[in-house]
Length: 138
Image (cartoon, rainbow, N blue to C red):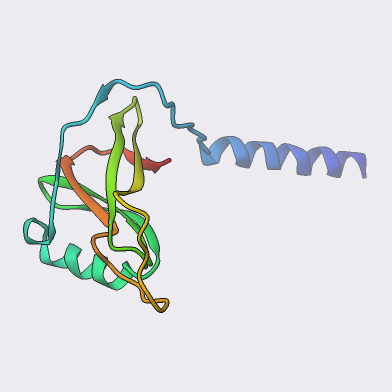
């Protein structure tokens, strides 16, 4: 019985070692800030505009890649205000990831009447150089 337990444990160890499981953490140590362009709908690929329009009622964060560029898109969903802006507060490259942080800001404190909601660009889409790393949203 003891021999059987040792054999099973040895097999589990061997299988684990052979599968090559890898765990990598995303270091937040900045290599460089990334240059980017904030894009309105007219400067985005048609498929990306469709994705944004499908998702805009709820908060979202996603990336979209073309052959040449990486688009990073963050939306804050339906809002009860018309004076909102989304700003990119951080966009930088680390050894194995891109880190993104945005903020929803307002100019005034006015709200819409009667529980109405608005989509006054409560999202931001930025175009940057294409990198083959994961994107982490803060």
